Structure formats: structure tokens, C-alpha cells
Image (cartoon, rainbow over all chains, first blue to last red; front, side, top):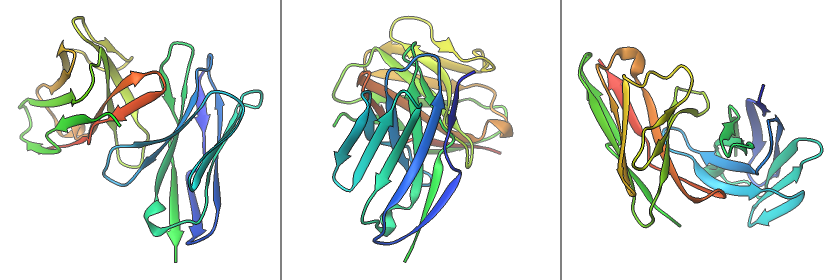
Length: 109
Length: 114
């Protein structure tokens, strides 16, 4: 079966760095996505990785290792507004998005 | 970026009635739109793939006669929850993409059936 694993909840301090991991097992691979979702709102797109390596976009970076079925989202200089759920999703060989359950990130002052 | 507009954002309806949710791509044509449901503290669950001009493709376990999808134009897809029951109360979200690397979400609709 297809499976996306990410931690249920993480806590970090304002101004610090946090890494949210995602491992996946899917039938085929056409890219991995990270989304941010604030409570009660729809997800917003953060990043897309299809090749191995690190993609940096401001305070957020996303890393992919296809051989390991592994990705992480790195958030730097954490702000209180970064408190949200972070969803990892993989596009399989049929171009369907397989979603992880999300990681709830709690930022403390 | 591209904009997907979903309406209404919140709706409360009585048990047994039907509710229609609209999803519009405002600045691009979307031949395919996706409908998701999300229960509290859970991930998005794909309900169906809506294809312009043809029948929607429903995921296993989703009743197509209960969740009617119409994709009549390249910018509009609708989801109608028929004969709604309290267990249908959920957050419904649509998405559309300009390409495989992009998925833009509507604002979501919070449905409460009383």
C-alpha cells in the first residue's frame, strides 16, 4: 500500500529552527509537496521537490532523497505565525496526490 | 499565483436537505479539479476528481449518488451534498492546478448539518 509518515506534533521556540521529516512509500513518484495549513483554513503551497537535494525559499527549505523515500521541511527564524499544520504529499505514478496526516507545529515564545 | 475561489465558506443546513458548494478557477482554465474532505485533526481525503465535460471519478467508499459533482465549464465545478446528515459535517476543500507542480486550493467550506 501507499504510505506517508510524518510526526503528529512538534514544539519549537520562536526564533529557532525546526525540521519536519516525512517518509514515504508510494507506487511511483512524480514529486513531493509541502503545504502549510492554519486551523480552519485550506492548505497553502510551500514547496515542490522532484530531484534530490535542497530547495531553499526564504525561511523555508525542503530536502528530498528519492533513494531513501525521505524529505524534510526546514523552517528557520521561527515566528509565532508559523504555528500551523504542515502537510507532506507525494504525487504517485498516476499523478494522484497521496497525503500525510500532517504535523502540528506549536511555536512557543 | 493562480486563484481558486470556493463558496460558501460556511454553511449550516438541516438534516435531509441538500447543499451545493462551488469551486471556481478565477484566472486559469482547469480541466481537472479535485474535491477533498477533511475531518478535524485529520489529513485531506480525496473524494473525487472532477473532469470538465465528463463524469467525475470517485474514490473508493465515496457515494457518488450522495456527493454529486458537476464540472460544466473549464472554470467551475460544483459539489452537491444530497440529503445531508450530521455525519456529513466536515470541511470540504476543492483544488485545481495549472500543471502537475501546482495545486491551488479554494478557501474551503465548513459544512455543519443539524
